[in-house]
Length: 189
Image (cartoon, rainbow, N blue to C red; front, side, top):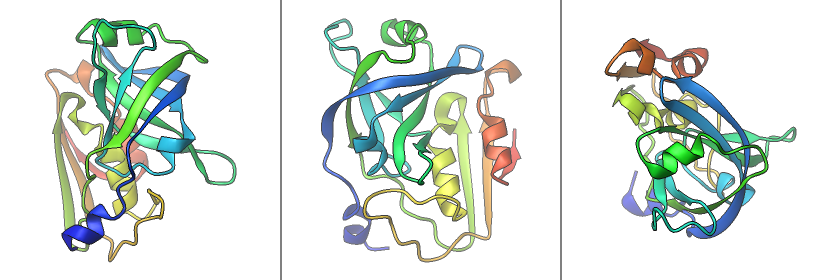
């Protein structure tokens, strides 16, 4: 893949308002948050990230970066929201655990270039702690299960094997394993 063809799919970042749809505990001190924000969900690529902050709050002053876990589709298959994972480690993430459906947040993104598609062969994704977050969308795209971006990226070929090699400081911190296994990935802990 040429550099220009990879980056031609990257959307211009936008500063937007989003609403919390749901929040789920994935593991110890680890959560998955779903935001409704079609403007980002329809253009974001696996491997891209976005900044999140609370409206009207300046502590912390800057938003915090979070990687795309996956997009959420409506009944017609159109992306309307996106999920991301986070670990409670500071002021913002501590407050995020109290966010409820309907709460408004500020989002700036998508940011970054995303991951290039691996093509044929094998794709091995290695992650530790919350580092598995960007790999669910990556795996779904690599396996041909989901398309991302607008316009949707054209994928040259699918890998023969997709694996996640994942570790955490203890078993209680392993997050999202079921999501990866449901997609047919080889998961090694």
